[in-house]
Amino acid sequence: MELCIDFGGSEIKLGVLDQGEPLRTATVPVGPGDLEAAAAAASGLAAGLAPAAVGIAVPGIVDRGAGRMVKAHDKHPRLDGLDLVAWARASFGLPAVIENDARAALVGETANGSAAGARDAVLMVLGTGIGTAAIIDGTLLRGAHDHAGVLGGHLTVDFAGAQCNCGNIGCAESIAGAWALRRDLAVRGDAVTDVKALFEADDDAALALRERAVRAWGATAVSLCHAYDPSVVILSGGIMRAGAAVAEPIEAYVRQHLWTSSHRPAFVVPERPDLSVLRGLAVLAAAPRT
Image (tube, rainbow, N blue to C red):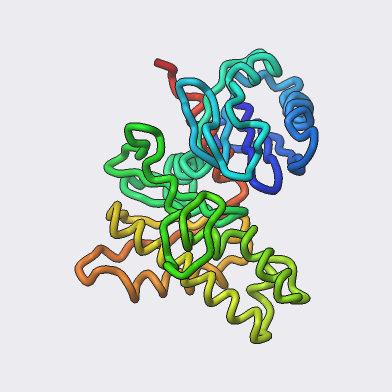
């Protein structure tokens, strides 16, 4: 049994899971005092259940050895450099592991989720930002400095685009992360302010905005397929609450633009994309420590 904490961009998701299934879950909004609120809520969830370990996911680069988030650019600045393993020990009296949220989501979906058993897969988390991860021949891609695979949302998809908060130009996230979509909706003065509602609206402004978003998501998925040659592409995250309205045009874009001889991967959407990260954290927290 594992206590899992996902520091998302707009909310912190918490759960106690047993063999990948949630026994109790809760959310805490991101804001002042959220670290303390998350600790209190997590302790409440764990009461009477006795989890053996803690899994913590963050929306940025991690130093797993040091138990810290290195940088997430405008997300959870209080976590920058914080020893989260020590925080978990002090808060819950338990050992902890820390991982990038997209990597954790990919572990969850390939272990016991929508792509269970897949050994070659990529994942895109479409949420506040755009997180990505890859698994090749059963091995989770991390790289020499823990940056490999997770920065797909910061691939350039528009050379004439604005500067992203990461410093790059024309990143997919700066066009089609939920934070960017909300920004553009506000600039347009559009009545639609919810990203899910954006994919249900039929006015010209909404159509143009979501077509641009689909191109950014699709171009990112194409690049991930060209780089990692997956059998499965997993689409997860809060934006996937819009379901087929998002998934189908992304898949169509990818099939149209892939290298001619590239394998045409299957596309899957988890039934509960909000649980992808928590399920992966449970697997990681339960793994033997070396």
